[in-house]
Amino acid sequence: MGIPQTPARRIADQFADRVRNAPDRHLAERVSRLVAALARLVEEERVDRADLRALIRFLTEVGHASDARRSEWVLLADALGITSLVEAQVTRRPAGATPNTIAGPFYRTGAPKRRDGESISIDGLGDRLVLGLEVADLDGEPVGGARIEVWQANAEGLYENQAPDLQPEQNLRGTYTTGPDGRALVTTVRPKGYAIPHDGPVGELLGRLGLSPERPAHLHFRISRPGFQTLTTHLFDGDDPALGADPLFAVEPALVTRFAPCGAGGYEARHRFILARAHPGREDA
Ligand code: BEZ
Ligand code: FE
Image (cartoon, rainbow, N blue to C red; front, top):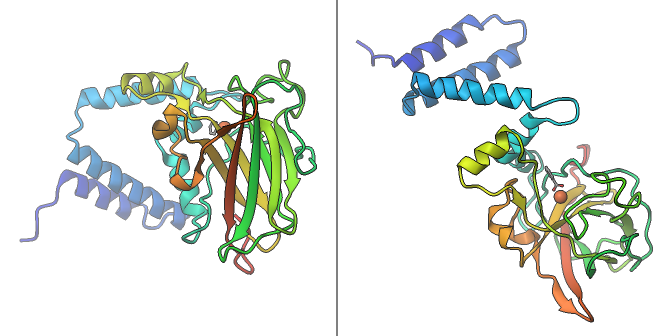
């Protein structure tokens, strides 16, 4: 007699068997594995009827909170760490290279070109922040001619395209180019952290778990140069108390810097981004 099958194993096996001749083989394999993983989880966690009802109620609410302008499903994937995990998996960098992170919904293409040192703050509101950036390769050699796109929330925690009537078009967005020494000087204002949307079922879930929706203050960067993998990443304010609890799981030690006071009410920071070379014949990621 063989080892007795658990109910989870029986369901997983029967499902896999029934889709054996599915017209879409790839889909059949992925869904079979999903069914097997879910069945195992239900068994291990001893999920009961009340759990199942609560789960269905929650997922229904997530669906109802989603429309063409807002996807509570995306937010759920973000808040469970799945978005960051997928991003890390598909853009894995060699040791020593700056980690790639999610771009988020506020990125816009075509940010205006800025001269070295020019400010991206059009309304001038907030504490001045000067960033001395450096782009290098894995051997520490400067990467000149790299395009650095930067975008960030203002000193109130709002992106320009979130509040178009409150900020000038393209406020706190810009495109710089590194010099032959790999350096670029960005002048801006110190960003404030902000909360991910939390007025729906995902926010309620975070609240019941005692989790904060507040993202630590950060700037976003997209750094590109032919021959290198495009880097989409964050730079976080090392003094932000929310640093250890980013609801989107994007914080990594290599992405944290300190905005040091300098001059009258201003701040400065230096940061080095390390690019990995592109794989010949493979699309940059
Ligand atoms: C952001 O940092 O801009 C962001 C990323 C993902 C979801 C919401 C905001
Ligand atoms: Fe952001």
